Length: 608
Image 1 (cartoon, helix red, strand yellow):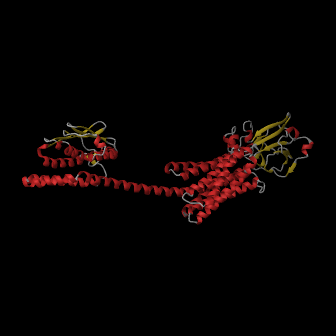
Image 2 (image 1 turned 45 degrees about the vertical axis):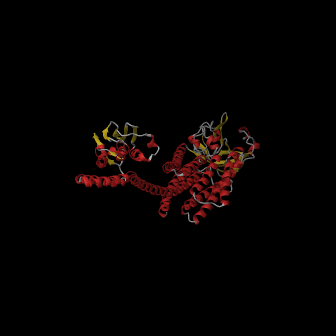
Image 3 (image 1 turned 60 degrees about the vertical axis):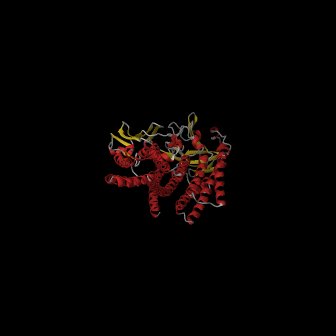
């Protein structure tokens, strides 16, 4: 944990220094002295005043002069008229900027010989805008402007009407635009990287935590796109749609951080009141969405209130969980501390309690803070992901060991199913043979020993074996059975292919079934023929007899007399993707066919 915190701290400092340097460069590019311009403003509560009224003496008397180009009108329905007069020729330079990315309506009235010409900007005027195409309103001034007459700027917004006026030369404008692009690309690029990484982890580990965090960061990005005015550049004609949804996106973002906290703290049992308050916060955020359309100005106030209350309460719960032993909550404590400070400053500024000049540093502070919080939470998720992956590896290892044990147990169980009766009968036959023909008895004992050795090896065999090993075991078995039944049992071996793999005890139980329930049931006995051949796509093993035959449906029904065939069928299918089919006619005989695909992994390695 200490190493992780150190790594996060270093990464955070590097990010912060980069962001602040870019922001400082942008601030330097966007800030020009405006002492050569006189400013005054007029509030229009009804928003119905027209440019033709502005030059009348009665209206001029209502203007209030200000010394600096910083305007703090706060949250209001009113429109405001800003009057700008050049004290020195050329003070307006090549353009005027109103630095407030989320201004809804901004109209600059420039005096010309034919009256005032209107230049439109702001996301509310996106369909008719003719500004310079920045994230905030920037108006180019034409050379045919009538010098000496005031320039008017009318602004109105359902959000905060706090902005700074500034003036540009063309070269300064180009520089500011480039820096603005670099800064936004860097910050939003960081956010989108976090989103993509967490989505990839979600698909890899199916982690709800990563998915909820990716959604949370996506909503952060969408909301900060409104705050920084990035949509004015990306969707200049249709920026009114995302910008008008700023409060709704903000409400969804608040819901997402609560959900993320709950998922992050999964397994924690919250008290009755804690759970009730969290549900109440989610319900309040949901209610903000419909009310924001009815009264956006008032709803904006409650939205800022909720953006402070929600992180404060989550911070409180995180602190309690951290003190109870959940050390991972340290990341939440750091992240929520930054979030609370950020939204507190924003709210105080919007309510004109704390007057912070509107510039690049002020507005991008929120985005920088959100990226920093995302980095901190990403560190927490990285630690969580590492632990989940380690747990998955342990579970996988346990699964492999359990599977191996199942295969060994299955093989051992298979042996107990097919050999007890055979052992008894064989030993009895050898006992009788000892009295009749000692040489044959010795040969039978050798076959019996080899058969037992092979079956003991196969009982612990978890891999596939070669057809040669399987056939060797079959021949030992058939030799012992021929010893018992003498001339009544005949064996034919037609081996045309070899060198491929198949499950242990795939052919021997079928051969045993042919002997025990087929030819030996006939008074005159019969013949068991084993054929091994190769086709274009598979290896084929056939065990046929001319015994009594049986109903193949008994194999599927689990008849104990044919359990050897059923076991072999399941093992062939599971271990090498093969098939086993049974064709039998009562009174005629039985033919069992095993097909082993050449494309099975084990057979590909044999080079056959």
